[in-house]
Length: 426
Image 1 (cartoon, one colour):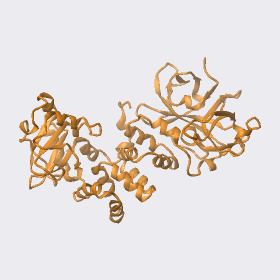
Image 2: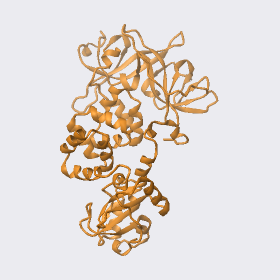
Image 3: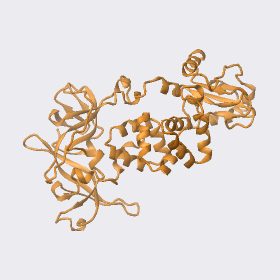
Image 4: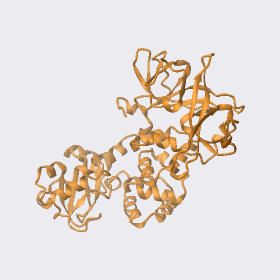
């Protein structure tokens, strides 16, 4: 039986189906028009994410039924125009949930004058076939790690949900962070771009340095610079420290020289030093593309130890595909480069064997000044996803991986172009 009353939190994530059962996408948010006179807001429609990750708007008039596992529309023909929030509209999950409000309800005297926050909104179908926000679920702020009781009150009993009040800084983001839990950094970055600027910053401030660094690395260059510019300098430096050195160098390379130097000065010297080395190279060369932190081993390392190193979950598959063997020191720039060992070779050797005895010493190396086009041909020629960068003195400086090459070959705005996701299902 189709629901005529539903809570918005239960809507998010539901499949959106056409009249013939064909899948269109999934509900990501609900668009409501909040008024200043405290009358029940009208629900304008749903924000639906297509398989291509484009988010579109579907009017509530198109919704014929809401079932426990899906939302069904009266047509499979929907506008594919990217969703754009209009003046007076608010996103229920992204902007209203987690707002701090006051409740004036004679049946709940304990809540009088107390700050509570919104945990959900109840919407109902009216006689005029409109959907309206009728109920608000609120909860007191947590104390001593315990969840407070949830109270459901009429919309008219709640103060603090006008567009002006919601737009004030400092809003909590617990519900949004729960949505991001378990998501890949690239998917979180995509969702972050869809948020209003205020909420985007509040989420960024709430994420820890490591998580925020992972997400920032998946943003476009312009979005990276915008977000970094909104953070305090010390926080921005902490995030840069947590980023991969090559990504941090790319970001800093887009800043004025004095700003980049100020951030480098605030960073831990051990973290900033490899970034400074990368900034010495043109960004479209092997030296500018490389990471200074590949898997580097001495020749006396066993195969078992090498395999343990490449199991590091923080390594990308490309960097884990090859280990590099050098004379000490093993920190880049290393001692004399001896050769590399492919992951497939490691898997075929007894665990006690030494990597120094199974080297591929004949694989051509990359010079740091080699341009992007030549690096691309190198990967195509040798069927590699990772390659060593070595200087004239035969010191290993780092490694270029195929994902670094693709980042520079694709258009600057490739992360924002939904057409590039055609056929890709997150």
